[in-house]
Each structure stands twice: as C-alpha cells, then as structure tokens.
Amino acid sequence: RRDDFKVAGVAALFDADDSDPAGALRRGLDALLATAEAEIRNGASILIVSDRDFSPTRAPIPSLLATAALHNGLLARGLRAQAGLVLESGEPREVMHFCLLCGYGVNAINPYLAFEAIDNLRRRGDLPANTDPEQLTDNFINAVKKGLLKTMSKMGISTLRSYRAAQLFEAIGLNSEVIDTYFPGTASRIEGVGLDVIAREALARHRSAFQERRPDSLDL
Image (cartoon, rainbow, N blue to C red):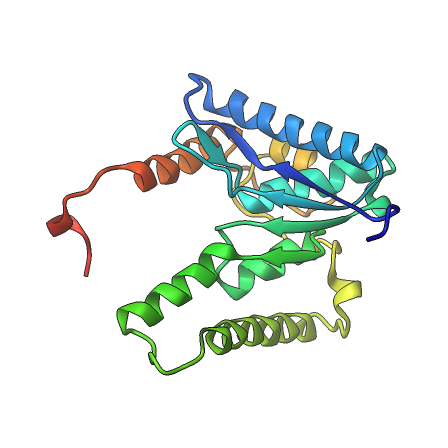
C-alpha cells in the first residue's frame, strides 16, 4: 500500500424531492465540484465519480453533465492535472456515450449497469448460458473499444490521449447558459434547453425506476 496514492469517492447525485429541480441540479453540481476540490487538496490522486448511492430521494446527475462540469471546474481551479477521474455510472451503454465521456475528460469508465444487464440477459437465457460471464463482459468492452477507435479514426486521431478532453463536438439543443457554465469551449450555434428541462427529464427517468408496476404491465 502506498501512502502517497489516495483514492476518493464523490457522489454525482442531486435532491429528487426539491420543489426547484433546476436549482437542485445546480446545487448538486456545485457540491460535486466542491467535494472533488476538497479531496484533491487533501491528497487524492484518483476520484471515483459515482451515482451508485441513488435512492428514492437522491437522483443521479446525468453522467455527461457531471463529467464536463467536474473536468472544466477543476481546470479553472488549476487542479485537473492532479487527479484522474473514474466515472462509475449506470448511464453509459452505447459507443457514443463512451466517446462523449472520454471527449469531455473522464479517464476511465465503469458502466456497472451495462455489466449487470449482460449478466441478467445470460441468466434469463437471452445469451448462451454456457458462455463464461467474464467472456460476455469482455465482448462488450471490446465492442466499445472498437467503436471508440472507429470514432477517433474518423476525426484523424490515433491515440486516446489526444482524444480525451478535446471536446471535439458540437452541442445541439442546449442553451448558452449551460454551454458557458458546464461545457465551455464547445461549439453551439443554436439555443436550446436549460438546466430546468435537463433536471425534469432526469427526475422523470428516476421516478419511473422507482415506480411500482404490475407484472402484467411490463414489456416482454
């Protein structure tokens, strides 16, 4: 064990019961950045940004918003180079999700819900039962890596280090306040939604997850 290598966890969550969803999301992002700053100043070398501790009263902050806000916030404070960011989220599942998260500064991603979904598919018989669970997970990881490589190659980039945090995207559908605050430097030629809509959509998904459903109402 090395005393000079410290790992700290920071929660990417916001209050799901607040009467002001946008304000709750903004406060959640502020708390995320403040906690990360404090942990880095306390010697943390790796920050695990996690939404695992969600509950009926605590909703996950959208993973890309949390990543961009934290990366750019630490850059502004001169602290980004002092710690790596590991995202532990239930959201990433498609290749483009991983591309965006890497493009906005995350160093590693643990898509825990995607892994659990793969295992659930195997147990239900939708995937070959005689296949090793670790092999199924490796197949998913390899598919994501190949998708990342294909995306980078289309941009003329040959290494992940050159792609990470480069923000080589154009935002569509976000207003200038969100872009300037959490995605500075990202091209955006049209206006769109603000934190209020982002918060409401996040809460709609969150409440749907905790909603009780009749067995005969579930999609097959």
